[in-house]
Amino acid sequence: MLVAKSNYIRKLVMESDDKDLTRIDLSDIPGGPEIFEKAAKFCYGVNFEITVHNVAALRCAAEYLQMTDHYCNNNLAGRTEDFLAQVALTSLSGAIVVLKSCENLLPITEELKIIQRCIDVASLKACHEAIFPSRSPTNWWTEELTILDVTFFGKIIMAMKQRGAKPLTLASAIITYTERALRDLVRDHSASGIKSSLEFEDSDVGVQQRDILESIVALLPTEKAAFPINFLCCLLRSAIFLKATTACKNELEKRISVILEHVTVNDLLVLSFTYDGERLFELDSVRRIITGFVEKETSMAVFNGGDYRELCSTAIQRVAKTVDAYLSEIAAYPDLSISKFNGIANVIPKGARKVNDDLYRAIDIYLKSHPNLDEIEREKVCSVMDPLKLSGEARLHASQNKRLPVQIVLHALYYDQLKLRSGVDDRNNPTDALTTRNQLKADRSLIKENEELRSELMRMKMYVTDMQKGQGIASSSHKSSGSRKPTFFSSVSKTLGKLNPFRHGSKDTSNIEDAVDITKPRRRRFSIS
Image (cartoon, rainbow, N blue to C red; front, side, top):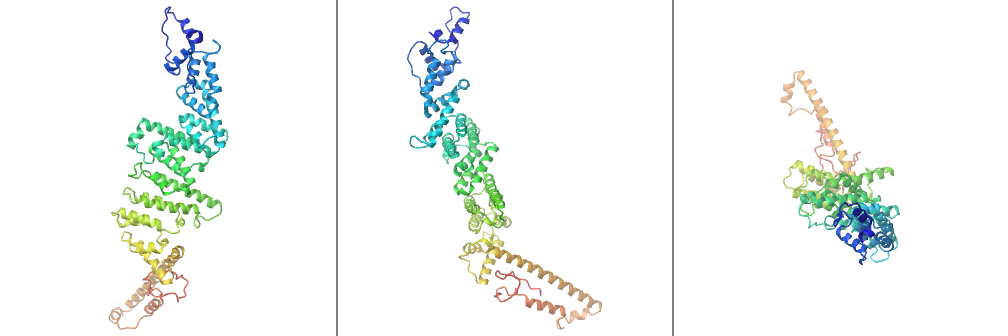
């Protein structure tokens, strides 16, 4: 009965030299013993059921055994082809199940075009369901695709692209598949199933999941905003954890930076901590992402003809606020170095922070959590902040904050004194940093001029003294110096000293008409006498 329907078995029997042949080797038959049993039942006329789960294997076995209609009418190959065309490949679910069964039947399923037929049907049905859903929930078809190997899943996604599927449709399928394939890494943020990162990433499971992750990233549509930023952050953390390729991580960082204005503090924290949340994980990626975003916004500002140094977009201001809050969250961790802290804080342009209160809070937390820093190190931490951009309450706190270096405290006190002297209350208007900075520049210039004038006067005094000594009156001048009349140069020095408006810094200087703006306080010790 086997010889009557299988040309392959017929040839084995005819070519055998053993007249009493009782055993033949069919160990490499597709589908194994279970499928051969069904093929043998077909030959003997025993009924069995063809299903979407076994039809691909039966079709491959029929090809292997040469059970085609060429040798016997209504043979197994014809029966399985009819089932594929009339039953299995008429629905999305059927095509997916058949395609799943082909994973262990390579390469013969590719040679028989079964895989391609399944992909064509699945991509067509998926595109139709995305536009005209036939059941609830509307994205049920994305769950159907999750049973596939990432290679077959990728082929369906590519076929859907060729059919014109929208990026959001593809993104929906990719997100669902990723959450199922990388459940412990993406969906479960606690990753309770991961005991040790080193053990996991070097294990067979870790290598397999790394391959899946890299394949998924390669499938992402070119539309950068197709995915939510939280999903991309989870993917990037998984890529870092699994030690994916640099190209894979760079692609995810670029995608995140494009839509960084929608980021939240929790999204950035996802990138920064290990799965157990006990230690900092990766801060360089956060810095590169913020840098990419700032460069993008800079390019847009320059393209639009604006001066980026003076004008920051709303998106950058929003990101700056988020980054400052993020720094407050990570500042308390002892293993956060000053260079890492400053590296992230300095990426944000100075003009993006209208008020530095959030950044001051992060700095204060950092100094409190790192009490062993010396004065120079504390000044380095505070160098990322502009003290003139603190609100009244923040300046009051800073002036009493013993953790801050002296220079920062003096800046805070200087600004408050300036406001009091100029009669301006800034509680409701917290920043006038540009005016104050110009005032400081003017003060520094005036100090320099006074110093130069003082030096010139000292040189002239020394010159006159030398002339007096040359005339032989040096000794008598020394004895009578307490009672003699003042010299011309000393009179000039005293007169200029009296004219100096900064001798009495606590007095009101609003009545002095000068070229220097006096809305801010001057520094003292400006007298040239």
